[in-house]
Length: 568
Image 1 (cartoon, one colour):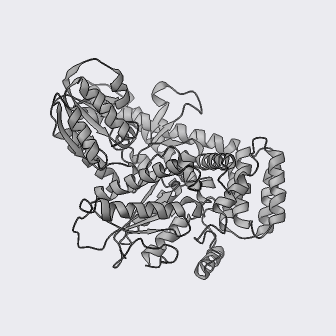
Image 2: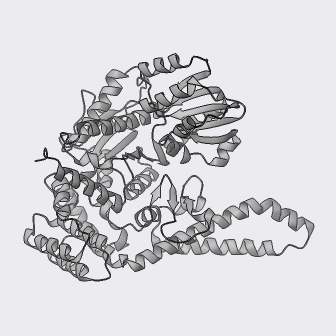
């Protein structure tokens, strides 16, 4: 609950104390921050009759002096300029300004100087500068996410902008939690180190007063890691509900756009998938695909029972009862058709792309040894006409990540076959992935074959057998959480910043993945938190990845690296 309730709390405080009819004015990023925690009907209850974007408000000249304007914006220079222009000829009766992060002194001076007509009632900082998609999972929706893969010399200002946004987001998380963490980072990642250092500078130097909450308990831990330490998780097909929807259809800010996959009535073209607003989704978001089908059938049966009883209206009392229950009935009808639609569409995609077949080999590549069998399985799938180009590419990538050192000759054979079979294949993309995230670049024990303890665990798992071949993969994050739980996260691999060390076991741990998180990882976090280990984990990242987005970032970084003369 922690992240969602923190943002909801800020929103309630923002809207509650200002009585009367209001217009809520957001920017392109705060619109996502608000939409994932507050529904439109809830905004209406708080007397918000209009929601506008700050740049479109700038275009309009119509006076609305009967409305009070509540602005919730990121403290960017563009937004400050928008406000300056709007204060020059105010359209609203009152202006209440809330910023999602720390304002600079210069920005406050600009606002004060431009409010000549004294319409501004208040200026406040409410630290909700992150998109709380799930109770323990947040994202920053970064637009140019590929930048983390490029050396600093390629685009210094782009990289600085990227780091600034991440530091802002992490800073806001800890201000919302009212804690100041001890900070660690992944040794092999320059960008993780840079973000960790700049976050420490913000919390312990520039704004040390703001972050000093005088708490006596053990400091929380912030761990900054790099997506390239586990490139396998975002490449895999997913078989649990939330992760699968994102992989096959796509989720953006807890909304699923169905327009690309078929013709649907207007009210069903975009559906909301939120564990806060949908009890069925909350109960099933981490269940595997087979069970989801059964559970949806049960929900459809329940709905049919209710429909039958509604058809049996004989008296005035029955009619009154039906009218009273109608909103609930309509909501249930919408919910049933939403989940049935999604599962039907996903079943079609699974069948079309032969994903059961593909995924079995993917899981083997990620979890089990055996290079000869793996080579044969990948070769067979590359030759299979029914397998799509993107699935072929992912299979070769997964094989390359696992066996780059063991079988270079066979790897070359796969590269050649891939190039001849897939017309859209961009040459060198798999090699670029290995350059970015190959075995020499990683410190985590991705395949459980570096560390003696992991080798033993894998053997035991092999003997015991696996419950479900499609969901046997565990993200690297799972091991990281285990190490933190046991106090075994190695200082050499994850150094501390400054002289702030962990005194005892932390109760709160925020793991930030530069380059993006996956829903498979957020499931790992939720299951870990449900096990009551005494540590509460929160996961955050620059974006939420699926394989499509991960490959798009990789392609973009490769394109820039090729055209840049600075890259060695």
